[in-house]
Image 1 (cartoon, rainbow, N blue to C red):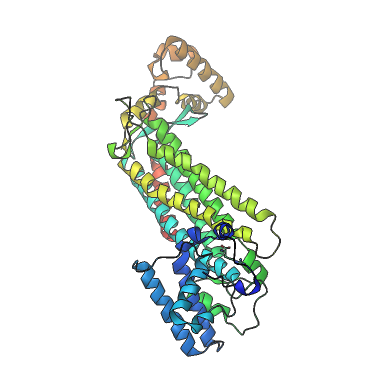
Image 2: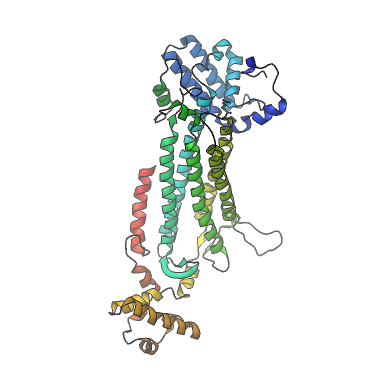
Length: 460
Ligand code: ARG
């Protein structure tokens, strides 16, 4: 196929150069955005009397026909085309002749590709938001269905203090909620139209940028044509938002992997969401969680690659920028692949409350409450801390839990201990008393869930 830019050249392009230069394999997925952007552009050209109405009717009808032919698989995109923009224009001109050659008036591929990418990513942001909100809802459901479960809370992966299991689950809901907020914010800066920036300097034609932007559902137009064609901040920003979202899924995955082990056994994955071993008949492996954790590296790599691609670029457009799409599309695909399967995996898992409760009994996670008990009897916290520490050391030596100490043993440690110490260090009491706002008690978690639901409603 002859290049549209062939006029200036004396030789055809080397075939390898064509392959190297072509982005069609990556950007053909934006055919819809490219066509809708061109339709809006052409309609504006007619409204502003830059093109004849009759030509624009041919253009828009031709473009709509190409769109439906593609969507109904009647035609295929030529894999040898330079990019989606060139292919659509060539296909249009092939169909309607000279009118097709007028479409590119007052436009460059530089503002066109920026527009297509922004439109496409805006749609993907919405899809990712929907999936993330659905996961948050699932987590709320799990928290509510297991509202009485107690588990050890950890620091340094050492049992620390007893918490409501729902509180732990809701911690992830909060991270994901911020991810949705970040995506909303990123969307605001993505849904801005660069169209009319043309190659870099705007155009001599009397165009109307705002009407095109509004027609395409965008929130406004970029203020500077040079920035309009060189800005890929929205790509970097989305790459970061997705990298952080994957970080959250990866941390959760790590815990799920640990919780599935015999060492923890806090949850059991549904058979449909686990895999077996080719050699060890007893194995049930959390492959989904491991893959989500593993794929997180891609999201990081894509972010770094986008930033690195941009860092040395002079204004305005440079071909380096073509690389942005392969990277951000991979992040988008990865996240959209991970979110639903991750949600199904957690939604179908069984929470083994008894095992969590048993783990909570060991590890002296009520020691802080024991010290707090003495503080309640008037002792300074540091003194109470030391007395409790000695008791813990004695218990470790004798293989007991604090709850198994006799009244004599308590009294021997400190005269302030009374019968009510047993209730004070009971796990239910320990969790129940952490009623501070955002704390681990059942009551505080119920308030947290109610608030989270409200925020979630405002974000959709
Ligand atoms: N395929 C190109 C890209 O993705 C489109 C823009 C080409 N512009 C140019 N001046 N060569 O960036």
